[in-house]
Amino acid sequence: MADWGKPRNGVTTEEMLESENQQRVEGLANKVSRLRGIALDLETDSKDSNRFADGMLSDFGSAEGLLTGTMNRLNNMVSSGRNNRRLMCYIIVCLVGLFIIFYYVISRVTAS
Image (cartoon, helix red, strand yellow):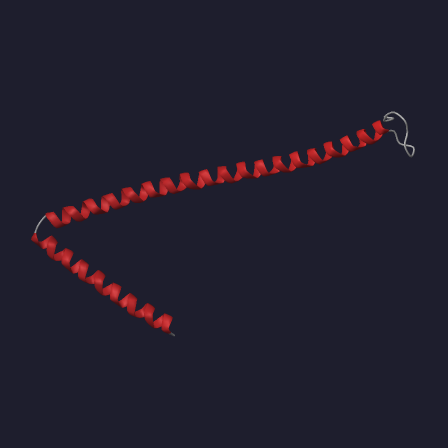
């Protein structure tokens, strides 16, 4: 039969069990503390991500409004008459020319 209450090397079984329980409680407390820190970091990251997404949403909304206004003005200019069509053609030719010039300059700079 086991002698649970008798000392072994000056330490009783109860004291050994109490010591082991205390070590496990401290280990568990450390793990809970680490989990709490991780949870707080996740909360902070998710709040930052939500703020960033909200900012992006408002930026896209303002860009959509700007592009809608620009398209409405272009449609009005194209549909208003022959002189505006000529002006539109000049604008398109200038934009294509600028694109070709920028392409040439960028290809020269990257080739060096």
